[in-house]
Image (cartoon, rainbow, N blue to C red; front, side, top):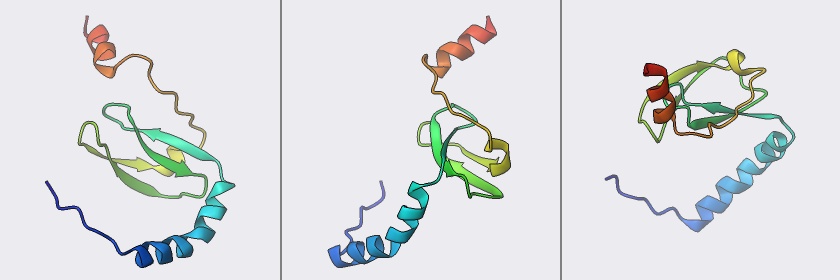
Length: 93
C-alpha cells in the first residue's frame, strides 16, 4: 500500500488560489460523464473544451482505457440499474 503524504496547509491554500480561475471557467461549461469501456463505471468527467485523446484508469476493474474526446461530444451517460455481471450473464444464455 502506498504511503499517504501530508501536504502543508499553506501549499494547499496556494494551489487552491491558483486553481480558482480554472474552477470558475469550468463551472460554466457542460460536463459529460464518461464510463469505463470494460465495466461501465463512471471513470472521468469530460468538459466541453477537451480535445484529442486521453486515457483513464478505472478504480473498479483496474483497467486503463484510451478514449477519443470527439467520440463523446454528443454522449450522455446513464448509469446501469443492474450490475454489469448480471447483464453479461444474460447475454451468454
